[in-house]
Length: 308
Image (cartoon, rainbow, N blue to C red; front, side, top):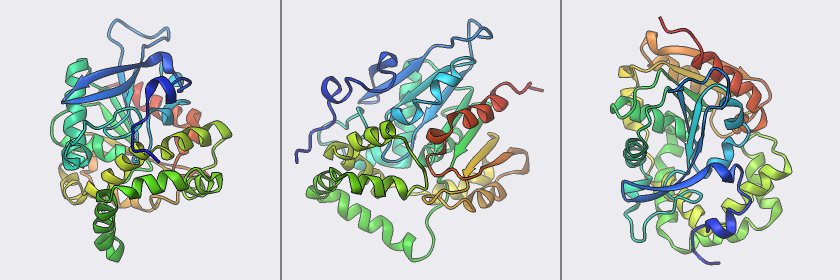
């Protein structure tokens, strides 16, 4: 039960869209990212850029179905967040520097500056949507719009909110917890329950990819550290001053983020920023993996809408 991070030469040998992968150092972190050039006929010399931001415990593989659909109309950029997948944290790095909402927004902003890419559209899944909005609010990016897929944008309420963060901090600070979690995840039944808990149905290939991640103690430590350092109070308080239009995509079967949260989020926004609220019947938290075609259609409606 080692704590070493995922190794690209070993664990990434058959990673989805490996040919699009590259590694860049920005903001003190060695990032794994995937870049897809625009391939469709409408692509101009400077095509629109779609930025994809995954959620807690995931990686670039989550976009394996969506990215190839989007490249017919845009350049597509995705990355493993700090401490996730193949973007390992530097040894001895303070978790709060990399794994908090502000830390991730700042780090991702540094990567975009290095790449000289200004996203036209940002699609964020779960916690990735929070990162996207934090970057918009802080002036790090100015996309045409943001799409949140089962977006986790509001803090937990009640007793759950009072106890979750301290418990997560304790777990993240205990070295053997990520190792124990990754060891337990070697049981296929444990992995199956984890995915079922999202309300989504994945194929065998999707399950295997998540299995590769959660069975690695380094990745597990990154996910636990992100949960321990996550604080949405500030973001929730700032939603009223958002100046980027937001659309929300909700899977009706999501068991991770309550579908009802989307309406509360929309009510928090200035009226002009309330773009669209879409419900995808029968899909769970990983709706974009279950039906990337449906999510692509919604994204293209945003991307290709004439600008007045």
